[in-house]
Image 1 (cartoon, rainbow, N blue to C red):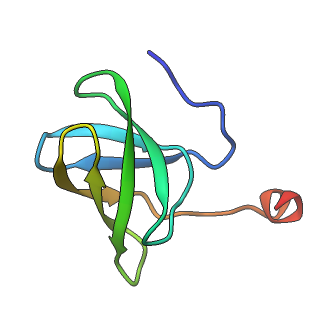
Image 2 (image 1 turned 30 degrees about the vertical axis):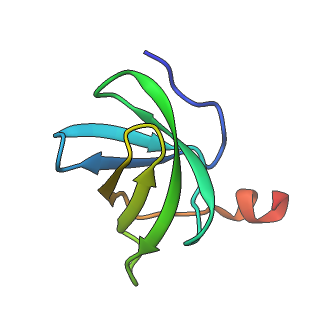
Length: 86
């Protein structure tokens, strides 16, 4: 299995497909970001459409499939060490 080496990788779950995803970076609405989809074991470029106020639900548009997808994301915790780097 491939796992991204990026320090800000973000885990999520796609309830429509029943499979896990990993997002390369958190993305604000209107930004492009890469996700790794365990369903088809490939990377997808997606457009972030919206994110819930608590940051745990993310709607994206998947350029490769042409579909909107909704992910339930793990709460994002940025450590002090990561804040210093950013």
